[in-house]
Image (cartoon, rainbow, N blue to C red; front, side):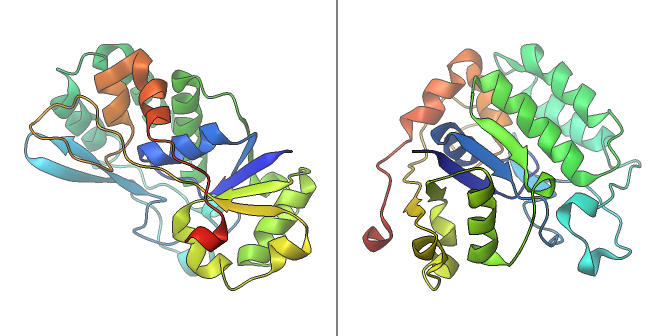
Length: 239
């Protein structure tokens, strides 16, 4: 059996993104679908002494209505990447593993990627490698794309020989109305996950922060924490 998960590339994703990546044989970055402005594709939250703060990558608006994620351009300027680096440093410089990992992240942020997806996937790849996640990872743009929603997912799965698709639970609403996976004889399941608790700075524990919160605070034990939240794979009938 070959398992696959497909997710849009996200800026500094949350811990569950990597839990799903770790759970499959192949993870596909879905960069060939339409970009949604002000969504997770370009922003995420970190924990600071002042509470949760959003970090948003500014992007060019021209032509955005019809742009695919892989086509979106970054707008560099006073806000990015300097402001992101300043806020991250102020928030995490006292974290146990900040000095070990922040320089690499900052080098990626300063690398001058022109496309948003190139930047976000570069960060995801660095994080996955730092955690020790070994799944195969590819971009949907490198495959043939046909159809939308469930039909597109099935088409991607077929190209890599997947027999089992593991979806985030949030996608159940639109997948439940399709028989595309059943027709393709690809098993459809959902990722059971419960957010783990780990040491954090700045007061009581807060869930769903960008996963660098975990890496900076926990370091080499990050994958152990990620896996501690894994729960049983769920069949569609269980939702």
